[in-house]
Image (cartoon, rainbow, N blue to C red; front, side, top):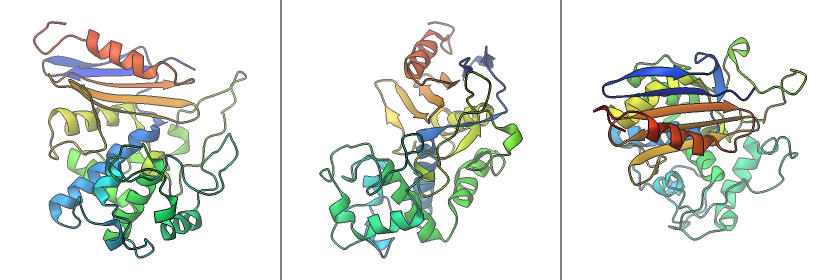
Length: 283
């Protein structure tokens, strides 16, 4: 199934869903999970539980002294950590299966040697977000799900579990093969969860986008979001699911989800958002 679900909206625009699947079914959101992790970080920083520039070694005992890596570095992809976890990888059809809690802790103990880039230079890192999520859970004594519920979902008026690693199976929308059988999914419920393992519904994601990017109810957008000339956005993709969430500076926003090949999802989202009427009725 490749038909997208597209939710559009903005100030003066009626929210609408276009030619898509059920917007209340849970779908994998891949790396869009990072904006939940980053928002938890900024909320904890607002409360004084941590600082954006808190050294990672102050949060995690396993981390060697002197790496220079801060929580901000992890959130902004400037930690120097590689894109993928170090060590053995899973099979091609399940690349994170071998990234266990034990593997994460082994990486933390050698974090100075795991780093492949220079501190301060941008290198997109799923490993960095796995470490960030682990650090936030360790500092607070709360599970990652509890942090997302308490610091993102509930403050935005959503139910706990509206974004989760384990949605009800009967409410999941999954990619299927040519004979209609569900395709195997990646293992994303372990330490990689804060980087890309959440599921949510398109309806819930639309409320997250409005709350975080349009109304800014929880403060300035977290450093996880990507920034263009006039659009704030993030995307995500797993083996058979892709999503883009974005908001224009004029208040227009979009959530676009597709099953199947992720190629073209970003391009389609940009095209659709730009073609949407502005809050003043002009394109």
